[in-house]
Length: 308
Ligand code: GLV
Image 1 (tube, rainbow, N blue to C red):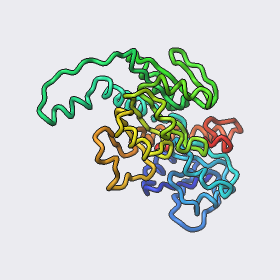
Image 2: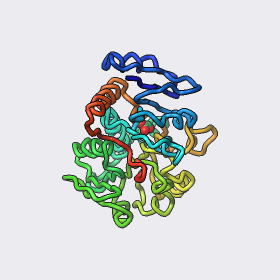
Image 3: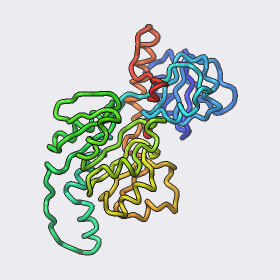
Image 4: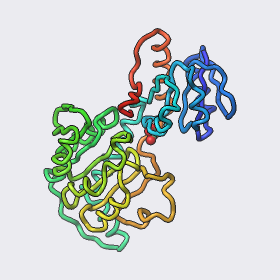
């Protein structure tokens, strides 16, 4: 059985090693350009169109990440093979760490203390009222769920928004376009964890972000293009939004100069909120290949119509 491997970062050797260690029957071929040899499966991240269009005969195309927008962008040119994204694979806990850190930073005013410390100011600030510090998570899937669970430990009022209706204990749930206004109006910290699809592109524009209460925060750990960046900046500068923590951007790396770099109320990280954990991912992919070989169904198959 053959698996074709491609990683845009070129770091294929440890993946070849770990995949073959767990599944000795698998011959792993790292692709570095040119014609694609006949393969049963492919595992790619950051693959160029030139490679993807040649994968028409694989039994499944595995992606070594959670987001599938970059691959689906190819549209009809993408071969009609099952596309399988990573499930949690160690990302849920990282997302929870990142989001909890950002929420607590705002709630406990560490951003203000950092700025006070730079000026040599010793001044305790009043504690915010937790009942007034609701956290609303957009996207309640494999990664949104562990984030909500982690936030629940701290007692923040929790809200969740999803495309289709969902229920979750301890979370006020809203769904669809009809539920969006009410969800935003009661959310103090908006956590964006949505997949990027034609329907969510620039979903968080001025009209949406303005529905958050004055003094709200945005945390975006999903994709930059979900947010209309100039609208976000304008709302921060006008004081409607108190700040944002952004891990993802329309263009990555975030170019320099870019107005976000100079805005002290925007905290920037370089798309690290949930890194792919190789050991967990390899285990998950090998498990799915074994299931497919036995003719069993697997989780995390992308629905192309839905876009994730
Ligand atoms: C990272 O952004 C991923 O989609 O896994």
